[in-house]
Amino acid sequence: MALVENRTTARVLIVEDDREMRNLLCDEFCGMGYQLREARNGDEAFLAVLQSEPDLILTDLRMPAGGDDYISRLRTVAPKCPIVVITAFGDATLKAQVVKAGASAYFDKPVRIADLKNCVQQLLDHQQGAER
Image (spheres, rainbow, N blue to C red):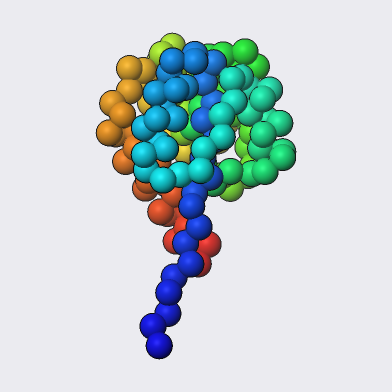
């Protein structure tokens, strides 16, 4: 009898205040088979994580209730959840602050979707491997 690995579908929270960008991200990641939830700002994201911790958070940074302190707040309620940050208003100093606050990865906008998808998949694969 062969053993069948039971892999659950990864749950990804997409946090973006720009509706068009949020829709684009949802379309791209839905095609990868993830269970998606959406939030329009940092407060909605925080509440969503409190309700049910996702396997990964993909978030904008500059939005209502956002910023590097927002990453720190997310990290307190989701200590092991990978956080991928995308922003159009970044520089080397901000990147260092965000990574120090707990981000797992950082991308400047405009982001290459293929690079973003690859990063998300690697983080989820690494996380699932660590849970075994």
